[in-house]
Amino acid sequence: MVLVYFLVLTWYCLHVLVTLPKKLPLITNVLLYMLLSIIDINRMTLFSVSLNLYHFSKQIPEFLSVVLYRDFIYCFTLLTFANVYLTTSRFLTKVLISLYAFLFLLMCCFILKWTGAIIPLTWNAYYDSITLLIMLVVTYGLGRWLLHFTRKERKA
Image: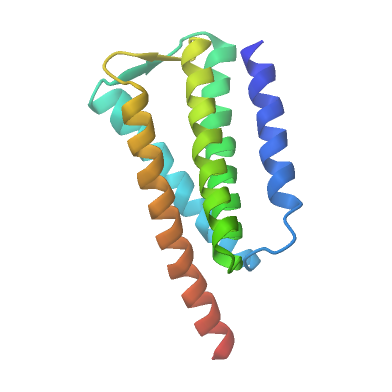
């Protein structure tokens, strides 16, 4: 059943990203997705294998749920955050997209733990929150940097 949850959440994240009225240029989105995927895969490997903060379930549906979360839900939600945050000038919209991205990803982390897909050893909600906040800042920084280079390339 956990796999069904994450398939629906993956579809939802993709749907939200695709239906955004204003988006960053395609090359910026592709490069940002690749960078976020690299960072996220290495983050999860570092925390689970090197630091032993949590383990992944050995059950196939639970492990596939972690893969869906890592490869699609996490990155698509951060891409949605970057696209909305960097293309709007309204302060309230920026606050709301930040809250949406943070709370949605935190909810997904809780679902992973609740279903046993991730088995925390010394990992807790505080670490999840700090990691998500850092990733939101990193996403913003990378998005601004890539957007700067995309605009610079168009002018040349």
